[in-house]
Length: 447
Image (cartoon, one colour):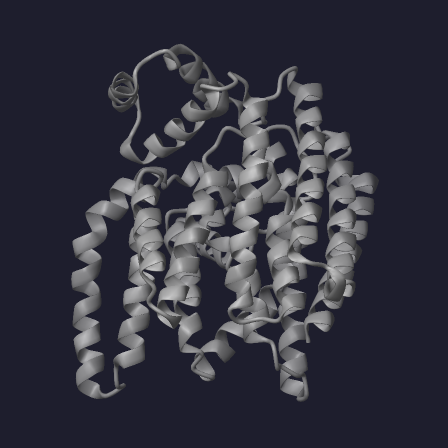
């Protein structure tokens, strides 16, 4: 089934890219300010991304884990350098297109590099919040060696190898060697993940800690070794220095798993659960507001969707954000001025977006076949997507990436023995792809 899923996804992604390329060249963007080199880089990235995944799938039996990690490193380093080169051509420096934040981070680190740790933390809290402390301490540690963003970028790529290795081990708990390689590579080689490595943002180390936490939690489910419990606790504590809501979401996913695993579905238990959920929600609401509430911004969503151009109401914008958080983000092909970042993510977004029908099938089958040990992964992905969708951050991969790495293993876990036999199954896939393609073209025609 894995081969069929990949073949259909890759074929559709190439066809859509070709069609939208000619559409863009022919009529639509003739009067728009575009970056042609970035747009064509998107096409190259997509093609090489697909070819690399196919290579890993075809020769998986002879690909050892060290060789796999060398592929990940070479690929990431190559496109990381390509992205940095684009930054330099357009900006005259090595900072990404979200320049305001990254340059401020860089300047702050330069000014405070000689301060003691206590003075640095005290100064940090004058201007920043608690959940940014981890990112600044991480970058400060690296700036102690070399005061350059390039050193941070390279270290991020090294750190990504550890993330990749642990994600492979997580996938291997449920999948074959071949499927684990593909599921891991789809995330590790995605364009959006590589982009984060060549920025001063916290996502590279943040994702690493999330993967460490989830992997050790899953190992605890299988066998409660002290080292896994200790690593789980340490990773949750460290995550709180990056975004307080994330360890709560992870813990909540495993509490929900335990409740579902032990609960008998009778009237009294359902009523108790209905009472418990609002109490838990309102108890944790202040923490979620402090972690995510200040990010909620209609203007931010309009920046990505240009929803006001379609006359969408707030409710429609909210639904778009939730849809994008669950199944996207919706890929944006052309690199338009002031919208450059989303186009860098195109290759990774498109493959993930076109896997959405199989994710729905996988989620249903995981629940239907009572794959209890997989429930925490599914719950964490769904709750995380809903939280950021409701916060109107359904197009911001900086938030979604902290759980998006689970999307690919979940697809393959839930569809391992799935076979398309009935007309109903075929119609579901046909209608799903029809809707996704229509949304894709509407989204890429929005400016």
